[in-house]
View 1 (cartoon, rainbow, N blue to C red):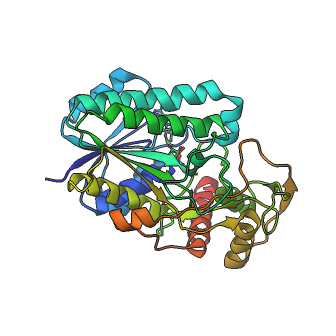
View 2: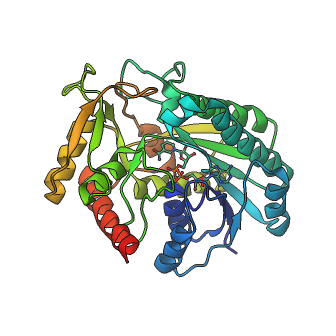
Amino acid sequence: MNQKVLVTGGTGYIGSHTIIDLIENGYEVVCVDNGSNSDTSSLAAVKDITGIDVPYYHLDLCELDGVKRIFTEHPDIKGVIHFAALKAVGESVEQPIRYFRNNLDSLINILDVATQNHVEALIFSSSCTVYGDVTHSPVTEETPLQEAASPYGRTKQMGEQMITDSLKNSSVKSILLRYFNPAGAHASAKLGESPVNPAQNLVPVITETAIGKRKEMTVFGDDYPTRDGSAIRDYIHVVDLAHAHTLALRYIFEGKQQVSTDVFNVGIGNGLSVLEIIHAFESQTGEKLNYKVGPRRAGDIMAIYSDYSKAKNLLGWEPKLDVNDIMHSAWAWEKERTGRQIQ
Ligand SMILES: NC(=O)c1ccc[n+]([C@@H]2O[C@H](COP(=O)([O-])OP(=O)(O)OC[C@H]3O[C@@H](n4cnc5c(N)ncnc54)[C@H](O)[C@@H]3O)[C@@H](O)[C@H]2O)c1
């Protein structure tokens, strides 16, 4: 029998790509989302790509009774991948309480229910934002965490601590995956980043500008002490990132994890500046981007990129796709979804 995995935030960007990877690797998936930043069109794409109709719960994970109901109806869930969260850094600076309530209440409920049932593995979407305003990259999992630069980053730091403390004396093992900057889309162009709320991440903002949904885009700051003045990040293809979740689950299911909670960086291992990403898009697609330079954005840091050797050594994970794959797939997806919206 296939092992059953609950994917929270599963209609969202990374969750839906991960559902495909899980199905392709023989797992049975149950999905839950409250639709606050996605809709079920992603599950239609999952069905189109994999042939599987994933059971879906439309509910808010901050409601404990709803979370309990999922486990009553699926008592054989062995793994939980917890993606559900609000994730806009700037918005979290303006609405900290909403971020703390949503991201922490939902996690507490997941921990509560996972420890009361027969869950063996919990994988948590953490973020490189937990490292705060680092002075040096690449960062390893040993790099000391600095003060979080935003309430969003703080919810990830607190989430990591809550998981570590809550599972110390339980049979549930957990992996905290610290993602760097996920970007790109599924190779089929049937699935990609399509947030309900205005996109905040760089690559969808680029493709939306190129296709004319936005008149222009802003580069937030060109006065950072970097090689071209713009901020530097580590862009990891969402399909590679999705596979890291499957490998993390397998690592726990196969009994390879000795510690209660472990943590892994998931990035490509080098940094590209915002202006370099813009130029990569222009050169890969032949499109010209209308962008302007604006002031720095609250909560943003200057530069960060990963050392992912721990994930490589223990999970056997390595990125296979690069920035050109990100640009091609994101652009193909943008043209596909815009075509659908026009019809
Ligand atoms: N995309 C990134 O740049 C990035 C980087 C680092 C970490 N992460 C983390 O990865 C996870 C997934 O991110 P994503 O990019 O796929 O975002 P996303 O917004 O596409 O997906 C998150 C999903 O969670 C759902 N959700 C939010 N609160 C919920 C609640 N209370 N109950 C049920 N569903 C809820 C949303 O509707 C959404 O579909 C998040 O935890 C995010 O913080 C994302």
